[in-house]
Image (cartoon, rainbow, N blue to C red; front, side):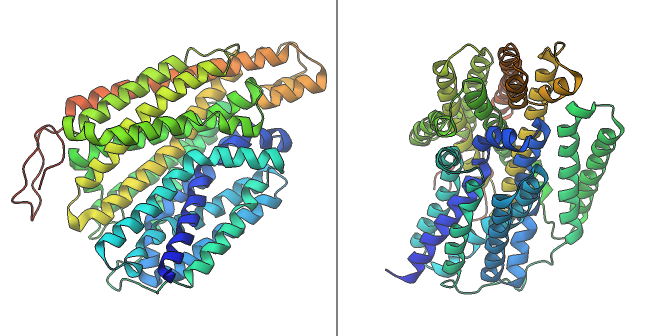
Amino acid sequence: MSRRWWALGALVVCMLVIGFDLTILNVALPTMAAELDASTGEQQWTADAYIVVFAALMLPAGLVGDRFGRRRMLLVGLGVFAAGSLLGAVADDVSTVIAARAVMGVGGALVMPLALSVLPSLFTEREERTKAVGAVSAAAAAGMPLGPIVGGWLLEHYWWGSIFLLNVPMAAIGMAACLLLPESRDPSAPRVDAFTAALTVGGLGTLIFGVIEAPVRGWADPLVVVAFSLGVVLLTALVLRERRAARPLLDLALLGDRRFLLPALTATLVTLFMAGMLFVLPQHLQTVLGYDSLGTGLRLLPMMAGLVVAARVTGPLVRRFGPYAVMSCGLVVLSFAAFLGSTTTADDGYGTTALWLSVLSVGFGFAIVPAMDAAVGALDAERAGAGSGLLMTLRQAGGAVGVAVLGSLLASVYANRLDTSALPPPAADRAEESVVAAHRIAEQLGEGSLVPAANDAFSRGMSATLLTCAVLALVAGLAVGGLAPRGRRIRPGDADADVDTTGGHARQ
């Protein structure tokens, strides 16, 4: 076999691990919370530190590779990712784990775009290149639903740090594969704008800090108010700076085209929704229903089943009805599933969760597959790179915001619903931080009545998050259906294209 195919295989492994790390931690959060004594806010930061840094640095990381060498920076990215993973594996406190996840986010931001960008130098024939890009993209996507299962298996057999340690040999394989890659760079690439990258990281970070800390400190707390204000100022400055830039890092003008805007927002909302669900559900399955880590991961499999179904049938549906109609229906199905899930109580068994989770995953697939295709299809050739980068950044930012907002809503409702009047003040404060902490307090103090009370409070918080998602998905579904463009812009070179007025793809 040619060495380029060996290199592709190793890159696929690397992308699979990057995909794992977007979700693998979620199933470990209850275990880590118990062993490291982490509050809900600290659990949110553990999940979000990776995603926030990953989202904010993805675009500048691509430019760094263009200017200084893609293979060289891919090696650097894999090395940074391995170092962060090793730090996480040996961490013994929450702050170190959060720092490790942030370091891993830096490495992941370098690996994701550069793994795709080196493929053209490996595969010069169009057909081979298409297969290679598809393999790498599929590996990254497959890692997300497989992450909780792999994490559950590792936690069943090893300690929680093993979910980090797994990345070290995988990154080493990737670095060895890089030796098979030719070096490539783009001398005409714009210089890396460190100030713009800093505005992106600072704006997203401070805004999410405010959302996560508000339920604990109070919405009127000075630190929370400053965080929100600073986040808005930094993101506003980012928008103004990018609008004046000759070659912007984020081409925000693309958001003026409904053919890109609607599917991009759909993909972002769905990613927000699913990231939030993958934060909430493992806690429900593991702490409230009492399953172990592997059992929790396996019980998230209905998500994959729904995605497989959607992947098989969305193509014909899009060709028949157009992408916007399918997106709209997917969001409505998502809304129905979330509403069904909001009726879940602490006394319901897994069957109830499996039912609405299966329906939810079908809606997710119907919404995300045509949304991604329609967003990329709306881009002119000269804006494909900027548009794809903006789409990926929006999706990752949506995931971070989903964990922050839905996690904070869950924490607020849980704390308000939990009756801790019979507990000593210090124990009451700890029990209100998370359902995991409440179970530990109940065991330490022998308060048997605290466990069902905490489970019920958590279920009510989960219901509130799902009901919020149901409303948002329904509004978005109706908006996409009502605002969908009725024609398609003819691009240069498409003079012979037929315009599909249903919002579908033009046919050559």
